[in-house]
Length: 269
Image (tube, rainbow, N blue to C red; front, side, top):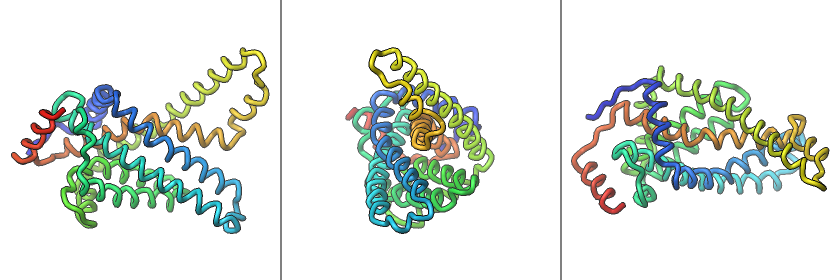
């Protein structure tokens, strides 16, 4: 049994190092695969807000948007799974992995889709409550952190692992609070970035600056939703890396077979 020191500080410090090590190409892959889902989330939320109480009369439009959102969600799960595997391999070897990061076991992927879907459902169902969003985020993080521990397909196994590693309540809650603060900072930075780009573009002749100042203002609902989506993209690599490290530090048993597979992966990198 491997037990590394577990604390919020150690998890955050090591996750930052892992994100730096995996920046190319794995963080890029994560962002590319997550971008469509975040965009579709913003579009779906915008349509729900716009339609309001009349949403039931536009079932076909909302269903189509929801279908595209689900497809984008599956793509994002694959990207997260690959990145989580890259984080795990980097944590084990100290170096960024090669193509072996792409070899996500099918059973692990299937279990991850199941648990991540449950976590996402909790988030949507309890969206109006702050605690519901927090619970959904924690479940989503633990799902990607425990993904590779699921070596056989099943329903109860992944849920038991979530319950097992969810016992580290103090560290999990502390991480959730830290990343909530990080989300606020990322939100402000994204708004500042867009504002700065707008000011630079306004110096170009022929640019319709007044119109864009209206579009890119906090009075525009769609602009706010896109800023939120961008902030989530910024913190996502760190959130995944932190949860992978949390699971490893909580105590992951590695057998001789696990080490043999790890050495084989390194030889093929």
